[in-house]
Length: 208
Image (cartoon, rainbow, N blue to C red; front, top):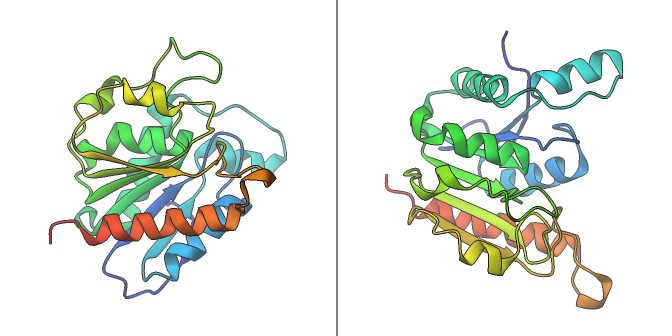
């Protein structure tokens, strides 16, 4: 089945970003839309897509859990093929979407990987890390992560021995959706904008 995308940004962009949603919110959620628009304004072509379970939710309105990882990985590979060629593609994902992207990045031979709020472990279960494949990842990677994200604290992440291919951008006072507390004096728009700037800076460093 051909992937159905929402495209944002210039059609003649040098890099396309194939952008996957998290477990609970679809490709046109406010977070996904805002981030796609901010990256589009920086000259990238962003293609958002829904995983199969989210496509079914749109069709019948019934909430359902995410597909198993192999089905999600297959759907992401298909999205890359439909957006191709892989050498001009960066894959990105919010939370679960970023985790799935990280699981296929090396095999897909894409230019780079961007994860927004990576779920380093289930919330409240730091003893169950989802990081084994991140120790050997070879694809250039940027993880944007809130300093208050319950799916991985700065101290926990510091102990994970992540691959040297991975860089981190800390989202100041951000939770899993990068929303800061009012007392921080920051706004979610500022955090998203800073994240988009960090992604742009990271992508500018990629080898030609």
